[in-house]
Length: 281
Ligand code: NAD
Image (cartoon, rainbow, N blue to C red; front, side):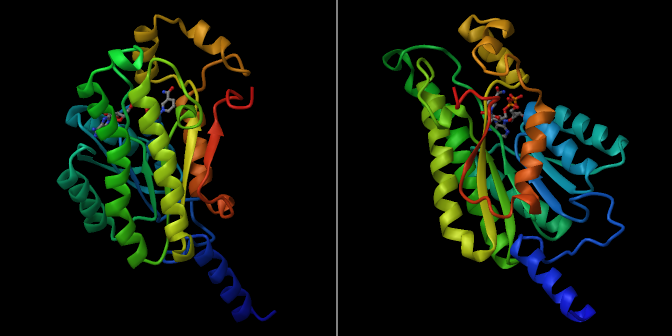
């Protein structure tokens, strides 16, 4: 194989992985060097760990949340570790906010190589369906399901234009099985898995890979709130998982980075089980 031919093959391989437009050099400091990554809901928990992990691997990260002070703190933290990140305040329930976030990312960095649609909230009150309020259903649905729909709706045209990209949606084990007392959350996460499958099929031949992941119990502010709502201790929650522990946000971030990386090039339209065995038991 001549040098030119080998380069051609490498370029074709990179294109097939959704990484074509900005090839990494041999001296690139990380897997995501010169890649632009958008993360929603990154002012705490899984999103925060994910934004930091992408930045640590060389990505330029734009991330959103609703709390500006916390966003500025996360941005400072990432920059202090030598990473590149910008906070943009946006509420994923609001269509113009989502459009503004995506536009701001493209204005600043020129493209979106990876989008992690992660913003989510829990069902505020553990109760059987007939005791859940329509207002709580709407709040959870608008954030978790509509938020992911809107995010993909505005990210995909840029990925189509740039002829490639990767989307990772944060679903949950709640997308795969039913959980009593959290109907709004359970329904919204099933919707995330559904939107993921539909988008994966619609854009697979456009060099855009779409997947979701299904964490179980992860040590974040959301889990602490949920534990309180359920009246459960961390020990009791951990006991329900084959690994008998609660997963750390950075462990989930590593799954997201893997899904976004070229190593997951054959993975399309799935909801990757990152629950520590919950869905296997
Ligand atoms: P978290 O509460 O720590 O973080 C959620 C993030 O989303 C925060 O930054 C919050 O500000 C942001 N957010 C919430 N509503 C928003 C909105 N309308 N617009 C913009 N940002 C918004 O929770 P987490 O545990 O890190 O959750 C992250 C994702 O992981 C969620 O989708 C959640 O459903 C999912 N998940 C969490 C667990 C767990 O055990 N923690 C398990 C499975 C799935």
